[in-house]
Image (cartoon, rainbow, N blue to C red; front, side, top):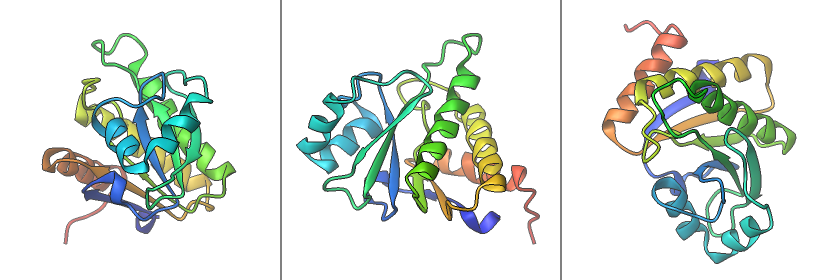
Length: 176
């Protein structure tokens, strides 16, 4: 199963996968960080399609075409804003991954790339987010065989190291 998950450092808008996941805001109309980068790379058609979706609730996911992106699809999910951990942030973040993967399964998506949802301007602690993300991905991969590859695309080295170490820990990888 370890061959079905990969952690890389890079730009999610450059990933040649069936779908990329957008860490969107509730409006789905673009914003900063990953969301803004995806909207810029996809072109104005993405915004036009997103306007028809009437937003998205936190923890939920919706899908659009990828337009000018290398990915055919964009799965938009709205992560929680970190408020200290007492406002169901963990459960909402887990729902982002669970609902995005369920949508990928329904669309017959074979390869999907995720950013580190909610860890930018929404301030979710990276280590905590990584444990939630990788646990949800692992659980999905254990019961689902239609998705062949899940890639965590980390923008910076610190986030990359955190996700890589979490994969090693949760998948019980032994260093040689």
